[in-house]
Image 1 (cartoon, rainbow, N blue to C red):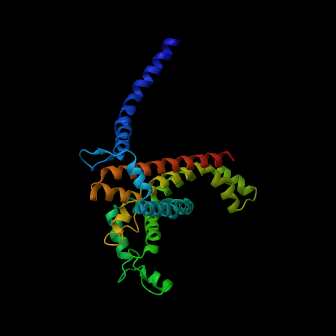
Image 2 (image 1 turned 90 degrees about the vertical axis):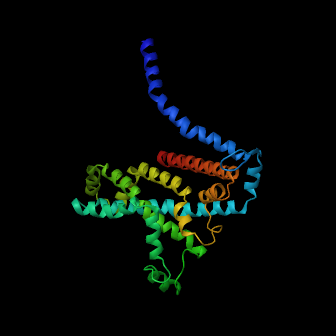
Length: 292
């Protein structure tokens, strides 16, 4: 019996060893190197000098870093919960369709997700163009004049949020549809026999049963949106980039444009801590919600 147990443990260690080795090589080692680089006054590539905690002291007094943190947090607020709610609403509507019509509608919502960011940029830049953009026909009656959303600071982040929700929601819609299809039809039929309204069915049956999918979508969206870069970088080119700076864009600027590898690593460490902290908080909130 004891020999069999030892054999099982040995087999398990052999099976997980490749994963542990790859994980350590591709994640743990780079993370240690990043933390070490954050304590150095060094270029991106090459030797540096020991700086201790000076980069972290500089970080707390850096106005652009505070702007980047605020812009990233603002973008997360505008996209994570609203985007997940929109995906759930679309999934609920699509789930009521049948056959090829459902497939066509689902494909229309999923198509933006497969587009590269360059295509997304060109498409929305054309739509928002001040001279001939189609969406100016919507903006002008509301504010009284055309708005250059790329150069108007109050419009910039909400515009990026709308574009991002449109671009990335296809994956969340698929997850919600998979969750909705796992709910037994017999539960809905029993609720219908009991005279439950659609609102009651949603809040008493659908919402609790797809809560794990909702948590998954919120977690994925939170991590992705904290790392926002591409669309903000492209749409802010030629403008006041410091006013619309986000964290990953600031890392890119320090590392690849100013060759300040040590300080860029410090910002990356701060972003890593923020992502881990919010992910843990969201996971704990989901556990409390599930327990209640």
